[in-house]
Amino acid sequence: MIVKMLKNKFRGCLIGALVGDCFGAPYEGESISSISRIQLQSYFDKLEGPPFLTPLYQYTDDTAMTKCIAESLIQNNKFNARDMAERFVKEFFRNPNRGYGENVCDVFHKFNNQNLENLWKPAQEQFNGSGSYGNGGAMRIAPISLFGFRDYDIMLDIVENSTKLTHTHPLGINGAKLQAIAIFLAVRSDPEKPLDIAEYIKELINKISIVESRLNRVVPSEYSYKNQLLKIHRLLELGDKAVPHLVVEKLGNSVSAMFSVPTAIYCFLRAQQSIADIETNNPFRRTIQYAVSLGGDTDTIASMAGAIAGAYYGIDVIHKNLQQLAEGSDMINELAIRLCDQVTH
Ligand code: F2R
Ligand code: MG
Ligand code: MG
Image (cartoon, rainbow, N blue to C red; front, side, top):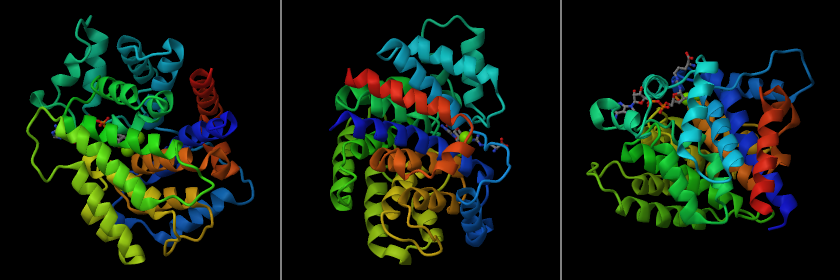
């Protein structure tokens, strides 16, 4: 792939994640029933319309942690667990009010208060030793898919070890892996050709089946990412008959990785076609507007869906206003460019 296209994809991926976070955040925690599709249409129409005076839309923990991962990989040119953990902690204490997950804050306090030999211990102790299955590992994973886009096995290895700094439950780790694989495949797909959705899902299922076959802990069989991907396939076949409530009933919209990562992948795939009540020709906007319309963990689902869509289409698909109105877009853009330079030199 030519470097120019790759750079556009890297920028699209990280800016896509930022934009999904910033414009999904005002709706985080709203139930699907309380979100008006008409108001959401006006919200995005206004954002993309003539410039108006408004404060920047602030990013949340999703972007704060994504930034730390990108900076750590750029600085070290490899995964460095201690450096990454220190960046998470420094960033958290610099600005703890970015809407971090309730329990992950305990991990940061332990990192800060103890001189740790075993960096993974605080996360292992979470939830009486079962570890977190929240989507906090998956929501920040995009820079690792980019850093490792040439080597799948190394990429997955970094995903696992970086996720375990805060999330050690197998569902938290495998959710991060699924999100990383979804981006990895999107970066490697040609945006000039229509996405072969069936092939994309088949590839995701093949890859996650291998990951899940290696689980070294018993997890109830209904908690399988492979099952969630099969549901995506069936929902896509229904088109607009798969109304948002049905999508949430089948895939979820919560803070747990199992019930948000597959939803984000669905949003990206569903937005390849037009969607009832969403008036735009832009598939990136369709992806994040649809993600927000599902309610629940809107910043995180829109951010993860935005990362995949941006990695597929590239930066040019993301409306300039959305980029300019998102806090930190210059800084994230710079990180994407530096990551791309690093992997292409
Ligand atoms: N925290 C939020 N949003 C709420 C507040 C934001 C609001 N806008 C405001 O500021 O007022 N969002 C962020 O958190 C999610 C990522 O969370 P993460 O990093 O995974 O955190 P944690 O604490 O590890 O897990 C989150 C919840 O999942 C449940 N859970 C996880 N593992 C569990 C287990 N083994 N057993 C039982 N429950 C488990 C718990 O309810 C945790 O609190 C993102 O949405 C991000 O945007
Ligand atoms: Mg957040
Ligand atoms: Mg969230």
